[in-house]
Length: 529
Image (cartoon, rainbow, N blue to C red):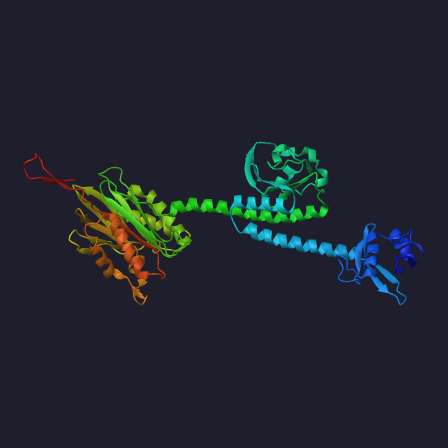
């Protein structure tokens, strides 16, 4: 406590004030024995002038005394003197500052997590990490990805905020703690890193000041380190404190998790793409003078594969039969697609036996019965060859809807084939039908996703075989590609936005390649293939 008269003379002070202000004695001038901020507050109080941080003449003043902060509260006495009560608020202010800093850091980490997790792209995650670190934690930041041999991928962000990707061929051992961080070991404290040892290949292009302090911390991943984070401050800024290094590690843990998740997603996406490429139906084309066309529409809008499939295995030459297979596995989605892939691979392995449909189906049925799958499948297959302009088919159904034939005059008929589905019973049987297609005629193979598609005016009526036959009658003389497009379009329009099963169609067409040719330029011509 210090008591001063209106003119600024010290009237009285207690023992605590004497310890705080050693030169303060009764009769001394206030401005000579106390910090300026107290003397100025006393002057403002005398003339009733509010200070820059005061709401009025009686408001407390704030300031430093040595290395601690105080609040000075004025109280007027009856004789006009002013009693200044000094309260040490250093601990409270430190707590308030720490709380404010913690709130700011928590908000930053929350925002950083949202920004990092907004994309599963590895390069994007590295860019966001470098930019946030350079903006909030240091003057510059470098992301070091796990080395690929001697190649070290780096992502820089300097004081200008520009992000640059670069790959260098340097030894990570040159920077203390970097090789340990890349292996996931705890970081080396910044005070152990001599700034002069920071190699030039670590510095961003815009970082021209001498390095004053450096932090190297790992980017933890999911079981495997995602890389390392290097923070750089110039010599004009204060070195990293222990609190800042801990905060940097908290940020690095979030960034590492996001980058690791992005890498795992990229790897899984690459694996999925590779596997999906093998499961997707092939693009069909003309083989040995016979037109083949296929069309597939999965049940789910977000799916690319399902339980329906088709393949065409070309013969070795024009006189050799080509095998076309169309099937429908029980169920839909990825599980059905896995069995689809097994069936397709098994059929391909059994191609040397393709001339005997019953034997091929029997071996396929045995393979499915001996597997762990509990699903079954239906198939329709045909051995196809063209001779003298006529396409000959041997068609066999294994529990599958018999294919439909559209003749050149628009008549539609069903192939006389039937059989037992595969993968359900140990003993199966089938009947093979022989079909001949003249130029312009088509044999259409289809799955029940077409005929059982529900839609129409009320949304609950089946597309049915009759509508399919009517649609086929309109396709007389059309190329194979046009036939499958027409059928799939009508079926899709029928279901509209409603749900449906997988839809697959394959058309085998005898092309209009035969043309009238004069033998000697004068006599009546003949048709040639």
